[in-house]
Image (cartoon, rainbow, N blue to C red; front, side, top):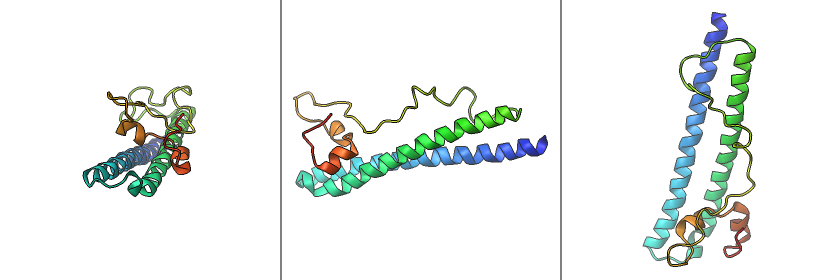
Amino acid sequence: MNDKIEAGRRVASRLFTAENAIDEALIAAASLQISLVEARQETRQPCGTIQAALNDAVAASAALMEARRAIVGTHGKIVKLRDDLGLPETGFGCDRICIPPPHEARETSQLKAVQRTGASGEDSPASLLLLSCDQLNAGSMGERT
């Protein structure tokens, strides 16, 4: 049993490392998107100047979100395997249910703008950063869902 517990601890440690690495990559990708928009604004460049780079940065974020969804699924399967094998919780990591119920972990095919307009009625930078990859790739900045 001690071998199983030690193996489980190694798996858990590597799982947490992977989860944290994906979260850090998501933070870095979001920061990159913000930096691209801020740099364009600061230098007063036309909006289209950064579009190709922003398209790819948003696509990278979408891929990271898919990786995050998959690692959360992996976590749930590892917890189930641990329970099926009768292994104890290790005492670190999740101290409560850390796998969201299925209705909270559902996949989404696109990102949606959380704020369509600013106080003046114009598009806000937040809504522009949260367009779907499909919309950005199609170049339909004005046709949001």
